[in-house]
Length: 446
Image (cartoon, rainbow, N blue to C red):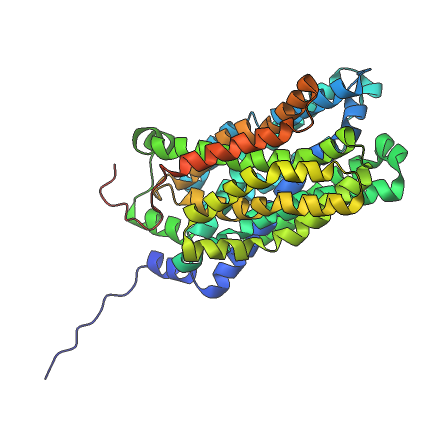
């Protein structure tokens, strides 16, 4: 008679990891990750969407164009501490768990955003007002350094490989919805309260809402398990002792590629999406409520397409779909800007829809693509550091440089050509980007 061989029982770590990959858990993880990105980027983009009102409250300039430049410079300063936040939250996520890092980042962001709504204005405390605004903006940037990278890493390490792009798109969809919520709420309040009340006090309301919204996300994320990959690495004792040192020694090429890819993605997004509100109002003369409202509605409609766009990357490859999005910017940006300049509402809506189509594919595919550049030992640190540095260059000062080019040259299409240059850099970088490392074994790495 053939003797049966008893299989060894699963270890607690293997059982936990398998449990965190069940379909129910994957969906909950993707939804909670996306919800956190909604709040984080609602908080972070409020400043840009309310730049017109914030500049009047905190800056004293006779020249409105110069005041807008100063306001956008403060917006850009929020990106300066992103690398510091990336190192902090990346190390926390690689050493203590992805979930721990995500809980900390969303709570701190909520506190920082609510603080903006409580700051005294320039008329009350003078030059101290912009100083306090700058400090809160720096804290927001510090927190943002760990959010998108943490959420995308968390989801990528939990989702099944064949649907990694689909579930990974919940992070950029959340970012898009958060950005749209900020613009939509700004537009709604402007329509209800009027521009005079918005200048006086109405701009504070969206910032104050950040704190209760952050507590909702904190609750949702606290009920999720740790990422399966982190659980397995911790059980095997394969966590990087110093994630930053590991990156610089073994994965610096991946960091450099991510910086350039993130530059292309965030420059085209922040100039062609966030800064576009300021461009439409100040350059083309659209009413603030009309520009903000159209942008917000189109963003929501297109954001729901992101999982479908990312699913295409599961079928045809992340690099191929990302290249398609960058090529779309090269071809469509100038025609869309010319179309917007016609000045009527229908042209605005159609042109914005066309200009944001490449954005859908770039955002949906970019975040899953970024996680696949790194091995699991220092993945969150690598994604956070590379993405934050690229975002400083592309997103942080993208709106400022677009406005600077417009102001100094007087050429209305200067922002469009700036976006095209960024897209070309993304296309060139893809030629040196290899296959996914997300599923590679880590054995033997120092």
